[in-house]
Image 1 (tube, rainbow, N blue to C red):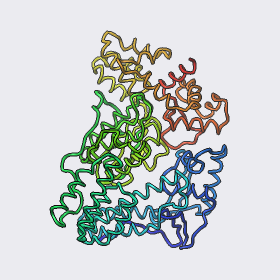
Image 2 (cartoon, one colour; image 1 turned 30 degrees about the horizontal axis):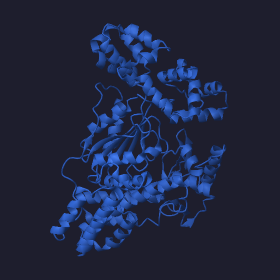
Image 3 (tube, rainbow, N blue to C red; image 1 turned 90 degrees about the vertical axis):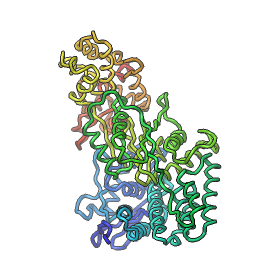
Image 4 (cartoon, one colour; image 1 turned 180 degrees about the vertical axis):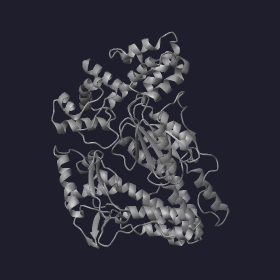
Length: 615
């Protein structure tokens, strides 16, 4: 029987624990971790091990309401103090805490952090189950569960940011407990899981997989009447709280228990293919080959549950997401569904509405009784929380891909990202949503000249493109490599067959009229950019308008930004990084110091910002 791939730290190494109160030990001796704010910083870094944590995220965790002006400097002090407490170097000799353009990163080995050991044991247990080694699976999963010393980070949960990370850890524990209980039931040892399942169902009454395991454990233990009562209680709870029926799989389990003695084990997955609710792809698609390859590799590999594709309005995020979803049919047999997170007016939809649509489209809880508003009888907040429980229970037992399209901010998708299981969520957003973690991030760049010409040629024909390749190049460059602008140009030229490419290029080169030319029927580049402009805070709009004056020079340095904004270096850094987070300013892909970096405002966004400022 193979051992789990868990590497232990060498004697004398640091051991961190999040599965209970935050602790750090050396050779079994607990190390004091300092005042509360310092512990909050350390807990947040450990909750996202080996991943850069943005400064803004740490600031929100420590000062959720009103951060002081010295917040960044205070964070530096807390990180320095934590580094001194836990040692400057890890077991591999590398610097323990490092700071880069993505934020602070805490390096920690698998054997040094209980959450990493927990994850390794859980993966090894699931792999054993897939090989048919149920005894090994049950043993490994039990070892993972034994690492828990109580509610995660229970001493710091008064911080909303830490409470969110703790909730994510608890969800992982629930899924592993369900895996373990199902393995024990399959082995005929249901009695060992009955009490634990009852306690968890009392705390998570709408989690269907827990209910099913509890029903099976009672049934296998000869307590059929109690097992059937568990289903009846669940059915009444669903109807009362959400106006929904239990899922078809849960109902099938109940009926099997009624008629087949002890044969039932778990709800059978539906045999019919999962739902596919995806919009039609664009008529022409070009570019982003590397980004598509990255997206398919990440989602197809099954390691990441959440991916954020970011870029300005019109960057092609939705088209890329839909294309990837269509190519991943084999990887996600239980469904591929797109849910729009903004309404027709481009404002954020109510989270309960988005959850209700996701539940409905995926068939996550059967058919609503009483229409779409039935699930909201007890108020939007209560409904959102209850729907989130139903949604997470469905995600935990499926292998589906959910595309959350055009997400305005992190709060809009709280409760929608999978906490456990094999489902993945692909988020498209204009900003980078730095508060979401852990996620894989793909920032869409502007189309390269060749890619933009390929897209234009698909719309106007390769023959027409060859009549004046220099003018065609001027057109795509005037569009700033923005896919929507190139597409609108192609649609216009496809209709205006008489218009020479050079004349249209002259129109787009004119800053005063470029946006007026980028309209084709009801598709307007200006209108799309305007919706992104409305997403920005008032202060960011003013800053962007000033930086847009530098757009004709092809980019700007931090020194030029400080001069344009008439402010000091630190204020300029904060202003530029805020716009980077919002997707309104681009920065180099590789690591470079803030002073050496060349930042850019996309051409058409810059023209729009200057026009607004001048108006």
